[in-house]
Length: 203
Image (cartoon, rainbow, N blue to C red; front, side, top):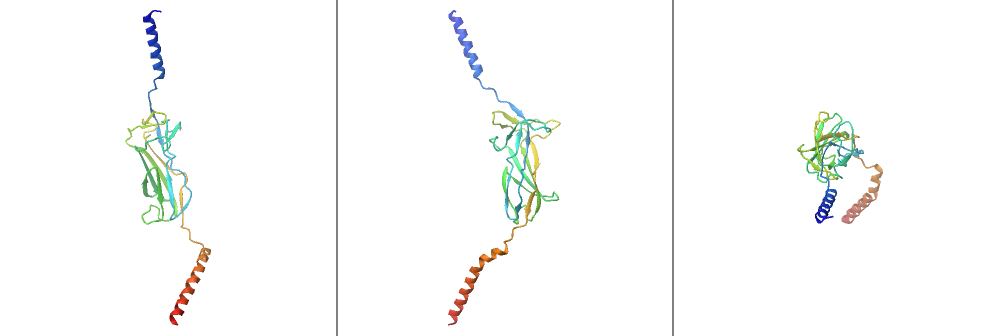
């Protein structure tokens, strides 16, 4: 083998090794947002409830009829800056009462400025939106997620979900009468002390 042939063979071998080692280019994956408002146990008026939208996902399948591979918006997507999370609160007649914003938020009840000020059954909804709709975001596998509207799914970058279980707010708990018995010794002590002070002042 001549020197020129050896040089060409070595060059082709090196080029082939670079071609094999070169990383695959990242792709844009079209899918849809699926909001999850969660489920919540009953609370008493005056207590707080932690609303958690971390069950929301990006679905790699852009079709509304089936759910494919998903990635959690909280645990898989590293940057939630382009997303808007809006919680809406409704009463039993589905009258809108107010809203809160953030993927997780603590909602207090029973205060004058709180959305829920009375016991009853309430409904929560969570709307998750990527804004603007042309935005993209990074997926854990190195690909980029985006949205491509279709006749079957015209708004894949926005989804609203109601909580699977309505939020029940019970009346505030009232201390049992037995609890007052714990104060009895202190009341007796105070009465005796006042009587003793009066008798000392009189003598």
